[in-house]
Amino acid sequence: MGHVPVEDALTGLPNRHSFLGSLRRQLQIANDQRGRLALLVVDIDRFALINAGQGYAFGDSVLREVAVRLRALLRPQDIAARIGDNRFALILPRVMNPGHVELAAEKLQRLMEPPFDINGQRLRVVLSCGVALSPEHATQHDHLFRLAERALSQGRQAGQRMRFAADADSDWELSEHWDIEVELAGALQRDELSMFYQPKLRADGLVVCGAEALMRWSLPGRGFIPPDRFIPVAERGGQIKSLTLWALNVALRQANAWRHSAGRIGVAVNVPSEMVAQDDLPELIESSLKLWGHESVQLTVEITERSLLADPQRSFRVLNELREMGVRIAIDDFGTGYSCLAYFKDIPADELKIDRSFVRNLPQDSASADITALIIDLAHRFGMTVVAEGVEDQPALDMLRRLGCDQVQGFLFARPMDNPTFHDWLDARSPA
Ligand code: C2E
Ligand code: CA
Ligand code: CA
Image (cartoon, rainbow, N blue to C red; front, top):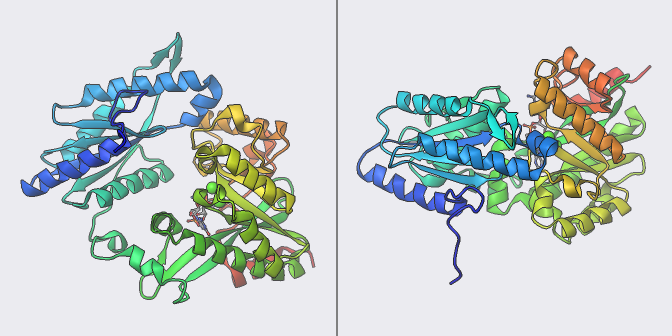
């Protein structure tokens, strides 16, 4: 057996692997003793901005300092770990009540308040935190972890620094009595999936350039399950490939009919990271294009920065093959990952999508405005088109225009619509 590291080399905290083991053990103890345990998942806000602006070594120093301050919060029985690039977790066993957890989370924020001093540079660090409790929210470790991560991402979307997981009762689809993975396996056969479309428009003049295809799962009597919940399950359960191919075929087929009303138009499909480094992706896309492709429909593939991390050379090769076939490549959610600027110039991409967490805070939040300006500038230097997603109001649009953003997408223009509704929307906009 090889030796599995338990420690994160940078911060000296337990790593993700060791953390998952501890969580399982601590939950076992809590369940046996009928005690309460809290799990906090913590992200450093705008870490990409720190890395992009100040460089890698600086980013590493920030991570180390955050780890030092986290340690100051711990009681002897508590456990802190670094579980991702800019993500930490805290296990607090034997908490008396949810109020105590709230106090701990507040203390955590306070500990980060004094500005960091790194090589003589001062910097403020803000954390976002998702909390889940056992037994209130879940008693299984993977389930509890998922709930805390989801609380974090939902809190962020809502602009909250801290958020508790929803109660198990009101959250049936995540309750342990319902197996989303099993249900999902039959969803395609039962015809429960469909594609929705959200327009992408030119920032000046608001001419429609195309649409992003977004998957929806509707369950009889239970309404829509958002993709944020079932896509990760499909990724873990191995169904993501068949879902992606299905999405690709449906989107290309349906987009074929749009061109009658809109002239040349684009359609963008999300491709999960695990497929990006797989050698058969170009072949799969080529056969979809053979079936449904049309010269007046431009296919874009949206991938995340994360897709490139595991094996950049291989991913670059795959992406270049796609481009040779005439497929555009968009980097999605840009700014949220641990972007490596060193190889940015080599990424074979045509488009950069600024993550909605930055766009949402425009124009009032100056750090979001800074990173948006930075991304637009960076992308243009390398000849890429910049798309801002999550544009919800006019002031944000005005600022994006001032900054030279090329395209926009968001509720200000349209929500994702089913295919017939998107048709009508296109018809209503096209000049008579
Ligand atoms: P994404 O690729 O970043 O997609 C954009 C998301 O932002 C969509 O959420 C869209 O509805 C939402 N959005 C658009 N405009 C606004 C706005 O103005 N305000 C706010 N608050 N949100 C806005 P949706 O459809 O729930 O999808 C969530 C995520 O699920 C997507 O994020 C994508 O990562 C994943 N996803 C969706 N469809 C697919 C798919 O077919 N395949 C794969 N692999 N992933 C998918
Ligand atoms: Ca996308
Ligand atoms: Ca996105």
